[in-house]
Length: 206
Ligand code: 5GP
Image (tube, rainbow, N blue to C red; front, side, top):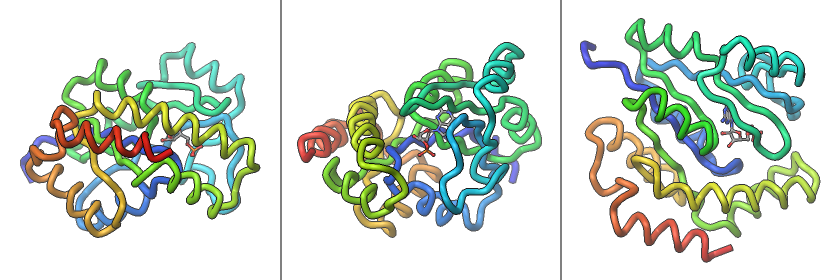
């Protein structure tokens, strides 16, 4: 393909199902998923260097000092950052690159690389997100509460993304995401009045 490779920045509150959507969307496309560094501990089933590079606070600080991150942010008491080199290398080799990161980091990327496309995946409601996190059963109640509060704050920032996609049914979300990838479908633009309304409804359904 001679098309210019794209840098896609995807944000979705944890428990939103973004992993499932992305693996469907990119099943037949060449793509590099950036592996982030984090200071949080692996959850059961997560694998070193595949889900994250799990590093210490001091190593994280060292990487900031050495300018090794494209962006970094703090989320629910832990640090997360995107190593810059693999992103730049893969784009230079003509591969699409996907970052799955939270909103502060997404805006940092847009600033550094304005060609990046920011896509936000919405849960049907904040209440549903809370239910999904409880069902996943990987975190204590207090952590879930913190994550739900942080999710609501993040959803409010979706209006500043390029595109917003609702994940109430997997198949539809995959089709919507693909439409954005293939043609930048207008109806998913965050600036669209209907999309703004949808974001407000998700927030009201807390
Ligand atoms: P989790 O701990 O649930 O894996 O991730 C928590 C949040 O951190 C999610 O919103 C996830 O997208 C975000 N995140 C993961 N990696 C990075 C990163 O490298 N940079 C930033 N800014 N956020 C990240």
